[in-house]
Every structure is written in C-alpha cells, then in structure tokens.
Amino acid sequence: MKSLAAIAIAAALVGAAGGAARADAYELTARFGPEAGVTRLADAASPDTAQVWTGGLAAGLSYGVTNLVALDAELAGGTCGEARYADVTVDIGGTTQPAGTLTRTTRYGRALVGASLRLGVRVIPTLGFAVGVGTRVGGAGAFSNADVMGIQPDDDAAGAGLELLAGARAGLDVRFDAHWIAGATVAATRAWPSDGAAADALTAQLHVAYAWYP
Amino acid sequence: MAAYDTRLFHRLAGVLVTASLVLATSSIARAETTRTTTTTTAAAAAAAAEAEHVVPAQGGAYDVPLHAGAVCILSFPDEMAMKALTTSAEYDVRAWGDDGVAVRALKSSSKPATLALATASGSVKVNVTLRVVPAAQPALTLIRFKAEATERAAAERLDAAVAHRTAELGAEVERLEAAVDTRARARAGERIAAQLLERHAEVELGAHGRNDEHVIVHVRRGVLLGDDGYMLFEIENRSRAPYRLATVEVRAGGKRISGAVALTASSAAPEAGAIGIVAAGARRAGVVAIPEVDDVLGDKLRLTLAGPDGQGAIVISSGLVLR
Image (cartoon, rainbow over all chains, first blue to last red; front, side, top):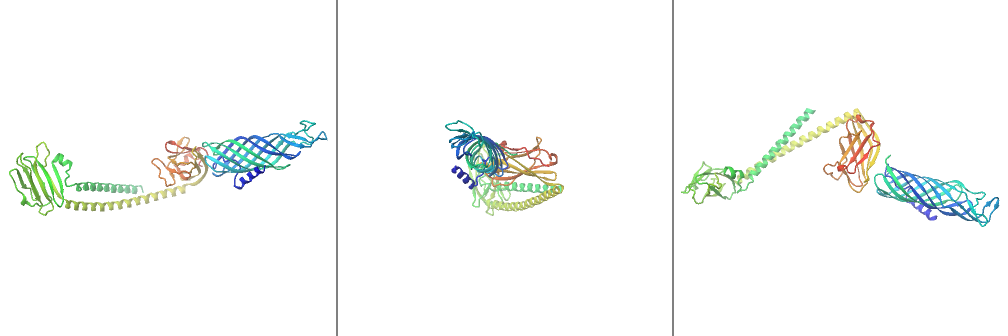
C-alpha cells in the first residue's frame, strides 16, 4: 500500500488532477462505466488489515474550464470482497472465544470532486486529483474457530462509517467524434475513516462518455 | 453625395476608357513599326497586291512580281534621285511624281531585270528585281518603301508620347481612386456614427460548437449597431489539418438572415470560393453581419460554418439569441 500512496503523491506533485479528461473548454461530459480494484480494509476486531478485491460502477461529470483543465465530479458505489481477519478474539453470548477468523463483506460508496489535466485532443492522456467523502457499510461479521462457525460477535462493528478520500489518477481517453469518448483510468485513493486507520485503494475504471456544449 | 459619387464614377470610367484606347492605339502602332523589312501584310498580299518594306540604312533588295501590262508603283518616303531611271524594251520605268516610280512589264516574256533606286537624301536605297509572273500568280501593284531610321524615330516619339500620356492617366486614376477611398471611408464613418447614435449594445452569448475533426467555434458575443446586428465568432482549429471556411450563415426559423462575413487575415491566402483558412492549431476571429436585426431579436438563431461543399460543418443551434 505504500506504493499506492507513492503513486498518489507523485501524481499530485506533477500537478496531476482528478478524473480523466473528457472535455475541451466549455464542454460538459457525462461518463459511466464499471470499475474494479483492490483495497485494504481495517476492522475494529483486528489490528491487521485485509486486502480485498472491489467492484462497482462509477458515473461522473466533467466541465472543461480550458482546453487543458477540467473540473470533475464523480459518484461511485460497489462492493468489496470478503475480508478475512485471522487470530481474532471476540465475545459471543458473553463468553470470550478462543482465537479464530472473522470475515466481513463491505459495500462502499464515494463522492469525489477534483480537477484533471488533459494532454491531447483526440488521444487524451490525463492526470488528476480528487478529494471527497466515502462511506463503507460493513456487513455482519462472521466468526469461526474450532468451536463455532460463522457466528456474529457480540460487539460486532457492522454498520456504516464515513471516511475522507483523496486520490490521484491517470488515464487515457480516445475521442471518436464531436460527442463520443471512451477511456480508462487508474486511480490511487487513500481513505481516512472516522473510526479506524487509513486505508488505500487502487482502482481501474473503464468508461464511455458523451460530451456536449451545455 | 450620391450625385457627386455618380459624377466621380463616370469620370473615372471615362479616364479608364481613354487609357484603354490609348494603350490599344499604342499597341497597334508598335505592331506596325516593328514589322521586319521583308514583311508584307496579309491583307495587302491577298487583296490589294500591295506591299510595304522598312528598309535598313544599308539598303535592301526586293523582289517585285509583276503582271505583264500592269503598272506597279514604287513609293518612297521622300524625293527620288531620278537619274537612275531607264526604260528598256521589256520594262517601262518612269517617275511617278517626285517620290515614286512606276514600272510596267511590256511583255509577258520579259526577263527579270534589276533596278537600283534611292532617295535623294539617301535614307532609302533599294535594289528591286522586276519579274513577270503568270496571271494566275499574285503580283504587286503598289510597294511602299520606308526608311528604318525614320520609322524608328517615329516609333520612339510615339512611345514617348504614349508613356507620357499613360503616366498622366495613371496619376489621374490614382487620384480618383484615392478620392473614392476617401469618400467611401467618410460615408462608412457617417453611417457608423448614425448607427451608434441609434443603438449600440453588446450581447453576451457564450455558445460553442464543434465538428468531428475537432474544429471548434466559439460565439461569445454579438453586437447591435443601429438596425444591424453582428455575431462575433472564433474558430479554434484543434485538428491537424487546415480548416477552409467557405460559408457562414445565420438562420432564424429556417430563413437565412446573415449578410457579409469577415475573417481576420492570415498568412495563408484562401483559394477561390473560400472565406479564409484557419491553420492547424490556430485560432481566427470572424464576424457575420445580420442586417435589419430587429426582425429576429429574441429569436433562436442557428449558426452554420462549413468548408467547401459543406465539408466539416459546424452547427450551433443553442445559445444564440440576440436581445
């Protein structure tokens, strides 16, 4: 995850900006597409983090301030794969259990705003940054050890939590005509949950976009 | 003011017509004087059996085909030295005034004979060969000999006169053109002043359009000036090829309402039929006039820019309302 942070910092240092380049000056662009990635999740029941796959959908708007810079907004949501935390000790029915494994599935959502640097006309390399808020909705934990199988602990940390997000991203768009654009973006995002340690995510997006002058 | 302009126009037209006539006359005169010593005009040879020779200072030899019994006059530019004239049994040779000689073949079987002739001043010296030809062949009845030096001097005098007159006419044309420019500028200034007093307003527009080749048109503002309107636009060519602008039109409700179009100058000269060229990566500003704009104030306008044959059309159909 240190590498993800390094990517984000490097992108920020070169002036890279948020969402992918999807508009020329005065153009508004709407985009939609799937995303997938990998992230590290922390859990109150464990001092360790778990690395999980993520998948979801993203939609966004970009407005070209100039031919070089666009402002971006993005909404995304999806689900994380099952996170597994080993060597966890929990209470079940008021009784402390021998160490076991806690698993949990989490859904996520995020809202980002940012800016992007566009470096082309038809083929458009992009660099950008974005900040925003996210939420993670943890499902019920399932604890298993030699004695129990898939039992929810007494003080389970299921439920929603807010987090602040900041990230950098790079991508490549291809413009087919006056309106239609397709592209891909890779984003490195750091999340600061209100109740836990910071977590990093690396996400790849594919998108189709439609641009017009509003 | 209109009467003054009409007089000015007539005067300018008159000067131009006069200049054309002088130049045409000059050309004809030059053509006459530059004929070579052996040239015979086609008309003379074919119809009147005449010939004209410009004789070099050193003299010249000329063939004179004659029909038996027909008189041929040899004409010279000044008085002849008549002592050389002799009549033989085959040719009758006589003086024809002070500056001419009449020759006649007495028999159809006359042998060719030569005759040396010269003017008293010595400006023309010729040796003519009299030769009888059958009636079916062309023969000469009049030959004019001219001194080359005299012809050259006349041509030079004519050239000088033409050059002088041409210069005078050129100066007159320039003066009249300047007068027309001054009047046109003054009239334009008067019209603009009147329009400014009537109405002048700037209208924020902010409309944009592009084509598939990444040529973008920005229309940021319009201008209302008197009873006319103007739409100012900028063409931003983000493609890799020059954009050739051939048409700019504004329509309201399907009716074309646009007038004159202007584009800022560029180094690339547009080809015929094109308004201008926007080089790859360049921007150029332009304006399209909308005469009698009051008729379309508040209407939704549609601006179309296109290249030759409608190629690369850019249509802006929203955000264009003058009010």
